[in-house]
Image (cartoon, rainbow, N blue to C red):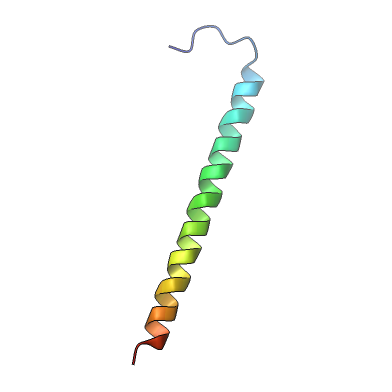
Length: 45
């Protein structure tokens, strides 16, 4: 499927950048949702 890769290091760097992007996005979404839920719980009478 991948075939012969002329530069594996570029593939590794791309994979790491994608992982970092996904992890940062998931962390942002988790922080956003946790803050929203906390605010909703706090403002609830």
